[in-house]
Each structure stands twice: as structure tokens, then as C-alpha cells.
Length: 178
Image 1: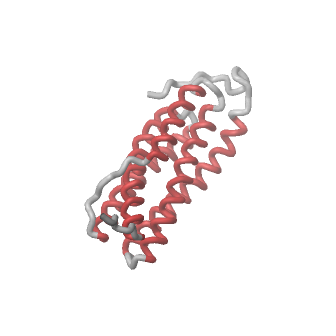
Image 2: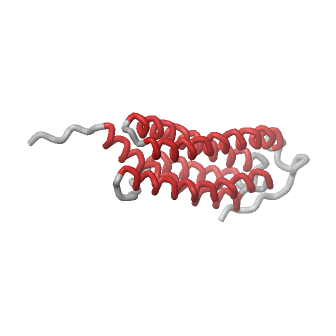
């Protein structure tokens, strides 16, 4: 029996389910990162983007509606790997002056993944004639790019602060992430 050949519609829906899962995981990871961050500006960036990401989940639900498919998440192996790496780094660097810099780097890895996915989905939505979906996806893509730029600015300051040896000028203790 011949199998049905996959189409761009299928790829769009599968990738949409993948990013839906990833975005939900991102909200959880951002909340955890906000609790772990020492640097106030970094903590605020995480809290703000967690709220923004919750709105992005709602936007994805609208995209599912536009294409007439159920809002279903499909396990995103990439996001699981990125959040697992973040967990390891939080544990490895929790008492280090570089902890916030490492945390920002982990967050940027997530942002870069999301930027790649939303860029692809936006292009495919346009090609498939889903103009309203493309607009929603572009809105999220722009938010992800803005967050990445903010994290870059914060990270540049954190990388300088985090380069001091333990017990140096900063020398303050770190909270354990919960």
C-alpha cells in the first residue's frame, strides 16, 4: 500500500505543533531563569519575556484555528535539549560570578531556536496562503528578535562582570535555583 506523500501543509502543521510545545516549555524555563538570576535587569528581562511568551502561546492557538487544525503540542526534542542544558548549567555555575552570563547564554540559545522556527513558519504560512497566520507569526518573530537583542546587551555587561574570579570585587553568594 502506497503511503501518502507529505506536503508543505503537513510540514507546516508538524512544525507548528513542535513550536507550540517549545513555547510552552519556554514559559516554564523563563520563570525558572527569572528566579535564578541575580542581575536585576536579567531577571526583569526573563519575567517580561515569560509574560510575552504566554501571549505567543495564545497567538499559536489562533494560527491553529486559522488553518482549521486542533491545537496540539508535539514533543520538541530541541527544546528539551536546550532546557536540559540550562538545568545542567544552572547547577554547574550556581555559585559562580559567571552564573548570570551563562544563564543569559542559555536563554539566547532558546531565542535563536525560536527565531529560526518562527521565520520558517512565517514563510510557509505566506506560501500556503495563510496571510493572517503569517502576520501572527511575524509578530512573534519580531518579539523574539527584540528579546534576543536585549539579552545580547545584558550579556555584554554580564560577561564583563562574570569574568572576575570568585571572591573578587563581586564576591557575593548566589541563590540556588529552585
